[in-house]
Image (cartoon, rainbow, N blue to C red):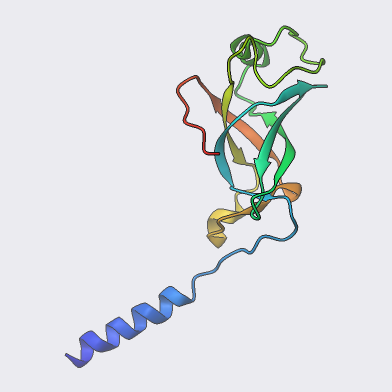
Amino acid sequence: MKQLIAVFILAVAFASCAKKTECIGLDCTFPEAVVSIDSISDKVIYTTLLNSDGRPFVCPLTLAPEIDVNDFIRFTGFQSTNYTENHSESANGRIVKVYYVSTNQSYVEENADYINALQTTLEIAAYSDTLRLTY
């Protein structure tokens, strides 16, 4: 019985020592999420994210190297194939959903709920009509 109590106390002690990265600054967001595209301009894809305080901010996204730019533009329905013009929130009336991940993976080691979006690149890893929006 004493051993069981000792194991329980140690388990509680280790659980309370878990590292957690705090959000520094206002532009903090989830390390990965499914969002909709707001616009594409000058070879950058923009979305509106919510920071840890629930405030919206515009954030640039890049395409993962394995995603073909022309296929992506065709999928979005945006008219410009060189994607250098501004576009509205939806392409041909449809919301374009993308899944992004942070290229800085240190949050995994530190068990962070939020990352500072200004200190890492958010990269589109997947896009589809069937993705479920996170926010």
